[in-house]
Length: 101
Image (cartoon, rainbow, N blue to C red):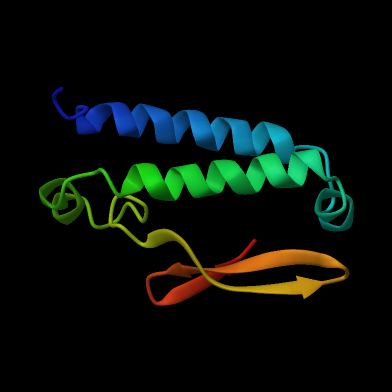
């Protein structure tokens, strides 16, 4: 079986972004964080974006350094997990920055 063409991962990433935006639309932060399914679905799609970005070849990442995910900034592995307001959230490794989910 041949490896999947990297361009398909870009299409996947666009789809994951569209889903995450749709799942979070119309919520303020408090309502979103307590929404359950919408919150979890959004977080999962953000994870999938990071995983797909890992399949973009280094030559492509280097040629387009202004595109953060293509530059490989997100590592889909959580750095730390804590509980806040009774709900776990993860601190993700994202290059020099860290993003909370």
